[in-house]
Length: 249
Length: 260
Image (tube, rainbow over all chains, first blue to last red):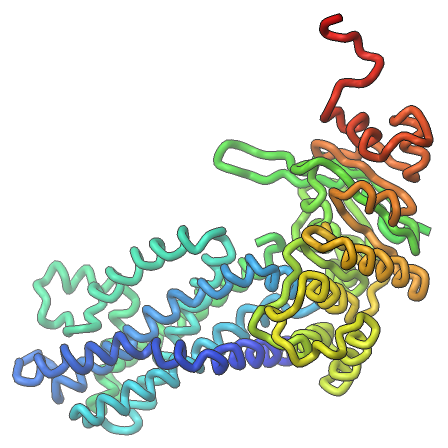
């Protein structure tokens, strides 16, 4: 039943995404701008990592895409609450978990699609990386969007207006991006900033994807990245499920 | 036979300014096949009660059964037995009428062919056949309401909850909706539990009225019995009866005049 319901909800929202092709492409615009206008600044610098500057920047941009995209996913549910769609579905026997999973899996699909577009553009700009590493990067994008999407939907179920939701998300995403070293690696940071960034879960994800992009798949970074990504997903889906299960949320 | 029975059903919301008792204790029974009008001033707890009876909101006190299923112990059973149309309806503006109806069928666990057949059947029954391929945003208010109700009837529920179903409709659409509600009861034996602020509607449509105020039931009976008891005469308007019961409005006729 969970599978049936999740597939149903996934299909409904995927069709919704496909109806607005513009929004589908628009999401990739911000990381694309960084790629075009920020990426070339790094090519001549020594950034302390292995490989080219593109192998450092693109993993960060992929996670930036997931971070900003999935964090705002909850907006759609605030609109649907206003339309009464959420309550209409909640009076049917549909699995509460499926209402969450169908949505976050749709988001993961959309953001992995956008990530593919971004990588294609990056290859045109000069990125060269092993295929396995690039595929691993997409898996991390998927896990990140499932995690952040779940938390975003859970939060959106609790707040009543987009005006309350937007600033809250903004206040969380910007520091998360800066403190996890998405744009430039934290190996360049002074000690205090490096230490601080270890409290930011996305730091471990970006370190892992950067290793994958230079073909190192069995490093400590990769181990920590996988553990943090899986742990964070499990935690976020649990929180999301709780909120979706509670009646009246 | 009672299809809905509630005893002391209550809901307290915790807010920053302390607890708010939206519903303090509702006792009521609804007989099978009855059209029940659930009336009360704004903020009396009507929607909160409805949301509890449809499992959308957990109660904080009391108990209730709907179609033999206990609200707290068997919410899934309640969901299978009842349909609910919220004030705001509940369709996505960008989706076609057909897709919404079919998805609704699938949410009630019909197979795809069953859901498609059921969507056609509902569309025929509620006069939506020519509108099936329109987006729901292109429907008139009355058509939207018929779609909302069609969605709630997907699984042939024993009990249909309608929250202010005719608010915002023109007189013609309202009359159509009244006919539809009566037809549901007469042809399918559906029990209808509806809230409304239109007292002429409550009068014309309901077999029995339950009036709530400040979270408790303050009066119940047939429209005629209530008029006789609280309005003073069988010819009293339901408006005057309602105001007499809830104590909001002009002072009663026998009160001493303030100035002579």
